Length: 77
Length: 299
Image: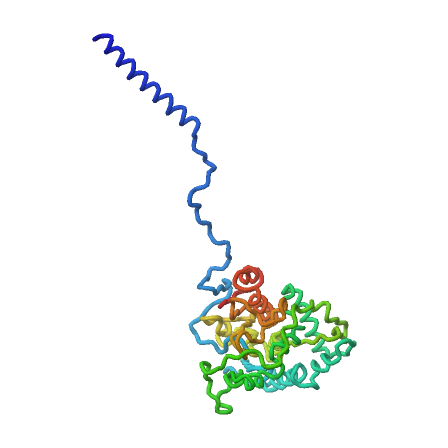
């Protein structure tokens, strides 16, 4: 009976030691790569210098819009 | 002080002049523009442009106006990397635009610009849905293929110029932008000139903040700024037949853009940028315009 109890303790201890060594080895060889890109990549701000973008109209900051009706339109002729 | 306004027909479309305290009567500037129309139209055989085209292959004395426009055309060709080429006239004629657009429209049964712009004049009522869709007129030659570089076809020296044999030019939008830029110089420091939609706003208008000008779907205050629009939505006379020739093919453009409006420092620059962007198509237009224009609208 005594020898059986000792045997069980030895098996349990060995299993525990093996688990610690295996996980330590795995962590040591699979360190996080801090240079790895995020997934999905973070959206970058648009490089466009124009603050006004509606559909496909873009106007530089120095040009103002108004609610007044135009005296004339630019158009295809 | 009230804004003075004058509207009249010239340069193949409607010309509108506005001024606050004009330097000279608006009618004087209108007369100057009408004279330029007679000088530069390709539809009158005795215009300076027609005579220049008729003498292709020879060195021809040219007026200061035509000289300046020819120089501007060469610059436009260079700035647009070849997409604005005034030597498209043979291709334009080949496509069916061989007489004034009013006559092309009558022949094809579509609405002419003049009918749309002045429906009251002859009782015509615009009716776009009734416009017919036609193919090229019978006997129309097939497109001529890519247009040769303008720098190979046109030589300009002070007071003289020469077209290569067989070449001919249509100054079209180049002339309208050029004239709008010079019209405001005549009108005075607070004025606006629109030549068929190619316009230059000089000074701040009535409010001092800018002349209100329709641009795309909004109104902008333009102060010492110009705008122009290029497109394929007008001057159409059939399915795929319109006035905007792509020099790369010698045929009417098949760009996925139908209309491009552009802001620039001068109406001439705006005209060149708008036409180039339209021909480039939606994939490249904005990249082309971003470093060159103060604003644009694409459709």
